[in-house]
Length: 341
Image (tube, rainbow, N blue to C red; front, side, top):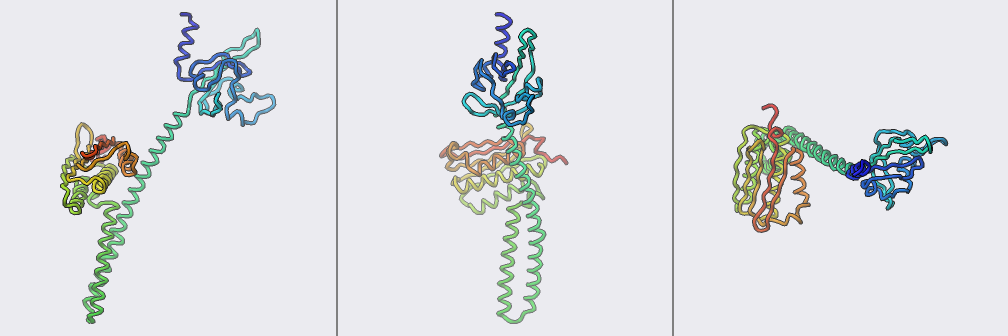
């Protein structure tokens, strides 16, 4: 094997497209990656990228930005391919030979497909936006829950006390009965406010932690669904940080709603524990199960997965028709524990 053959083999294994062109942009040589990316052939001119097609140039200036500067850093643009499709690429060039006998100048053009990288960056950006949206929403829920509890709730309590005091001074039976009905309505409204506040942000979560909040949550479902046996096992050594707690709580909440609404289970198991530097959440039901290929795009399942990603957790769901569903979330211990511990 000659040195030239060895050089060609090296160029052909490179993922970047490598093209040698003359000053007229005619392709002299190219590797396989360049041919696969563009569809161009040796002897054809390299078309101008979208940037060079549109840029303003002086009479004596080369339209090709890369040739004009002879050696330039990477920049991104769209390059027309043989099929007419525009491909996002990173590119740069360098003058590699200036033949004094013929006056010919040759340039090395390097192309890197930027499409996949842009797609990955867009995906990462979307995930970051979703995480920030979840974080912002939970912060707003916390604020609203506090306002309902401390503001509206306390005001309604004061109104109830005033109505009770007023009722004790009323002699007329009809007015007394009317005040009793108003007090009952205000009491009912207070219950609604407490429930709304709890749905926005369970008070047990902030005061006592994830284990207490989950126990209260499952106890409330046990009251509403007496035919279902709820089994719990919560073993955390310390408190988790607030973002981990609220997201794990919401995942269990979503899983419970889905199980009761669709699965028709007789048993539900929920466990939270620490194992091998991970905080583990396991949720199982013995319901009807579902076909994951059909239901995996459901909004509720996507919400649970996004919440797991928000706390850097690994989300997995396994469901077998006729045998129930298992949901697991693993959160790194260093992410899950409160930094103040």
